[in-house]
Image (cartoon, rainbow, N blue to C red; front, top):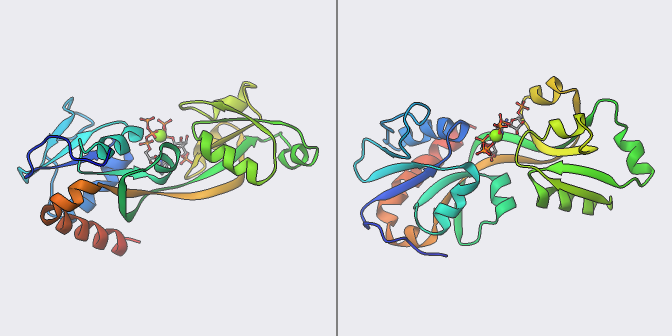
Length: 224
Ligand code: ATP
Ligand code: PRP
Ligand code: MG
């Protein structure tokens, strides 16, 4: 797993997901002197060139970023702590919390659901979430029995149509909860995105990688 895929040793591939991770990583790349030459929102290309011929950006699903980096198909990438926790991060070096894509993992319920009462009564809770591990761990710590229903998105819908009593999902502004008549009842943890680096790449391509890591670190610290 901890390997570099068969690629030229003089090239660097950065794995990013479209949307907020791509957008919030751009200023950090700029700080490292790297400009991505195509916009993933308009281009159908999955490999994007940069102003540095030896650096390219690949566009993958957010949950696939660690996989590409673990196998060395990408040298480095940016992934949320939620993704790293849920899908494992074996063999990945995580040198920098980039402080981007900031949100929190929370428990939410329908406005009229009495969460505290349900807990007091020892009710078995039905929990819908994409974050099965984090949800299981959270409720186990609290000694609450739960049935977990795995979803892949739109968690906010589950309590509205009776699929679950509660959801465990990411919250940032709270607008999505509000729009769906849900309220946040517990904050489980703060989430930010991390730079992840393939361990073999770090050793074999240190000269190319280190200046970029340093620039990312400086830019993410100053923007705190
Ligand atoms: P996909 O759409 O492919 O299933 P996704 O929904 O996980 O993926 P994004 O919404 O771009 O993809 O989320 C990427 C990362 O950004 C998440 O893993 C999380 O760490 C963070 N994130 C998710 N939602 C928010 C939000 N509302 N505000 C800030 N950061 C967020
Ligand atoms: C994420 C998350 C919540 C929402 C929370 O969805 O899954 O639904 O953001 O953000 P808020 O508190 O600011 O409303 P996203 O925007 O990524 O949409 P998605 O369903 O396409 O993942
Ligand atoms: Mg999302």
